[in-house]
Length: 256
Image (cartoon, rainbow, N blue to C red; front, side):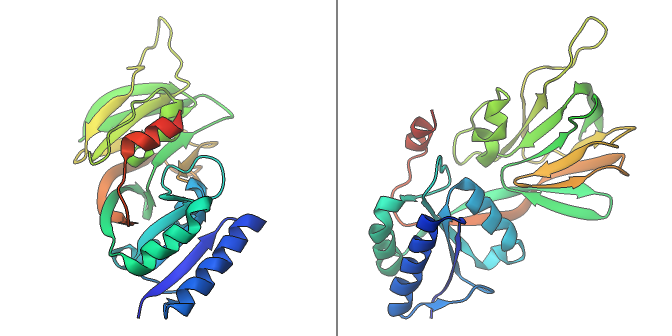
C-alpha cells in the first residue's frame, strides 16, 4: 500500500487542496501516514517545500516529494492549483521519474546542519570579518554583512539576489557570493561570485561571531560562541517525484 503525507501552507486555499488530496488518495486505497510516508505532497510554494524537506530530513532515503503551487513563485513546484485534478490523476496512474537534488552539509563544532538551497553567515549589527579557506588553502578575507554558499538548486534563490549566476539543472556545483562586501583602497576581496566543484570543502573562520547567524534554507542558529564552520556537498539528497516533462528553462522564464 502506498503511504502519503501532505504538508500545506497555513491558508484557506491550501487547506482546501490538502483536504481534496487526502480524500482522493484515500479513496484510491492510499494510506495517509504523517510519520512515515513514501510520498510527501507539498501545497504552497518553495518555502513550504523547504519546510517539508527539513521535517523529513531523517527519512530522505525513503521519501519522494511533489509540490503544488498556491502562492507566489514556486520554483520547486510541478503543478499549479488549477492543475490539482491532473496532479491527483498522475499520482494515481503514473510511475514517476526520480530527480535528486543534493544537500549542503554544514559542520559547526559538533552540530550538523543540511541545506537544499544555501547556507549564509549574516551579521546585520556589525561588520563581519571572515577568512575563507578552500580545501585547506587560504582564499580571501571578506568584510561586510556576510557570505552565501549555495547549491545548484539554490542558485535561483538568495544567490540570484546577490548577483550570482543561475546554474543549469543537473550540474552539481557550489557557488560562493559575498553579501554587501566592503571594498576600498586598503581592503579588497574577490567581489564576484565564485563557482566551485562539488568535492571542495569551504571553511569559514572569524575571531568574532557574536552577532552573526548561520542561516540555512528557512532556518537559523546563533554563531555567538563559534569561531569556525565548514561546508561540503553531502551524499544526502532530496528525491523529487516527476510525473511529467520537466522544463528548467520554462521555470527560469517564469522566474523573471
